[in-house]
Amino acid sequence: MRVALYIRVSTEEQAKEGHSIGAQQDRLLDFVRSQGWEVAEIYIDDGYSAKDLNRPAIQRLLNDCVKKKFDVLLIYRLDRLVRNVIDLYNVMEHLDKHDVMFKSSTEVYDTTSAMGRFFITLVAAIAQWERENLGERVTMGMEKNFRKGGWNGGEPPYGYRLEDGKLVVYEPEAAIVKRIFDLYKTKGQREISKIFNKEGLRTGNGALWAGFTVRYILYNPVYIGKKRWMDNLIDGDHEALVSEEDFEAAAILSKKRLISREKTNVCFPFTGILKCARCGSPLQGGEKKQKLKNYRYYRCSGRFAQGICEIPIIAEDTVEKLMLEQMDFIIDGSWQREIEVANDHHVTFTVPDHAQLERELSEIQKRKKKWQMAFANDVISLDDLKLRMHEENEREETIRAQLMSESSMDKTIPKLSKKDVMTFAKSIKESWPHLELDHKKVIMQTVFSRIVVDTYGEAVGGPGRRVACKIISFETN
Ligand SMILES: [Zn+2]
Image 1 (cartoon, protein in one colour):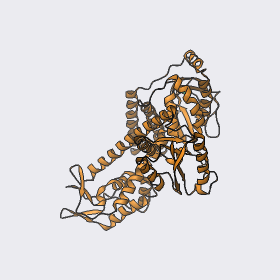
Image 2 (tube, rainbow, N blue to C red):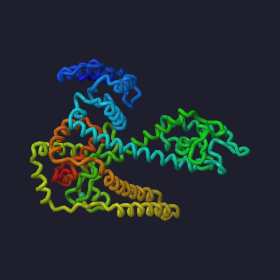
Image 3 (spheres, rainbow, N blue to C red):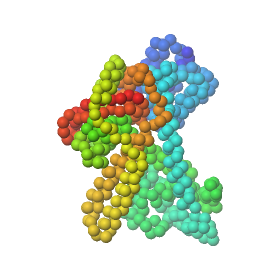
Image 4 (spheres, rainbow, N blue to C red):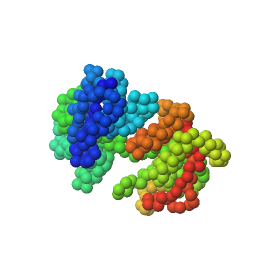
């Protein structure tokens, strides 16, 4: 077997011990010797981050795949190679196409064993899912803006005036457009609108700036000199206000910010699986910002949406610890007993009805409008309005989370046999501390269909006040 070694350190890591090029190389060479393989080439990206695949050595490596220079790619840890599942998916696809196997010397990720291949399939499925959803969201946003964006016969876009049917740059506004693209490099849409409003600036219609008016400008291709013709973008006969690079950079940034925002909403590995032992409702993941490490927790929707339950909030790390302990039962095969216990436990599990949830959502929207009207008509005070809106928003969030947990039980994730789960349990235990949240989620959703939890007593949960928790029963898929 001819093996290619890939080694990477970022500039920040160069100073850190254990991360150096030499340290990674030594470990990899030890591994190669233990396997009786032969090194074909060593690829080193020194001082590069893994934020994308724009690194000279990785590019050379991918090219050499095509030339069949090696049979296996060996890395020290997955994060040396890629930092997101979409890149991983693309690299895997490329390797696969050219019959190159892939192995991490310290993790379960590899394509040289059945289990490793299975794991990568899971990750790839998620990547695919993310990519499709992302693509959809972005094009939807763009289309909407295109439709609004045409000035053909309509108002000229902000930054221009219409003269004899032609767009001419209107300097005072054009300067603002340029500023938006510049500010967006470091600030969000809402922040930008706040800055403008503070300065007393107003939009073309004399309205206050808002996040969406800023977004509308960031997405409008008119500012790179294009215009819409039928469903295509063609070069316009007006002057561009920003370069294509800046326009593209803003689009990429907004895509990235969208992902990171979505992630905090979506990525709770146990959402959809955890159920409350007291009322049978699903537990929803949540996150509270804290100085050092965010407090991540799960709370009973029976308590927070319906008020039918008293169970305290449970910290995520408490759940993780319990689940990893439970893995031991799975590994030694005594889990069957646990399922029998589960059958004795009389709780009816509520399956949220999609239509019902949607109805509740629209009720909330209606109520929100009513509160706003009540405030506008001096029926309630501003404080009252804020309180009501806060309550409604909380309810809305819970319902959205419920809807999401329903749809996130991804049908494309392959079902495992009990034997697979036993084999897999060991790898899960070992690799858990190194896994990203989305990987954890795939694993949990693959292995478990339900984990029923309860707390000891009525202690008050929350940051700094951890409640002890127990698993009443669980079911695997
Ligand atoms: Zn409950």
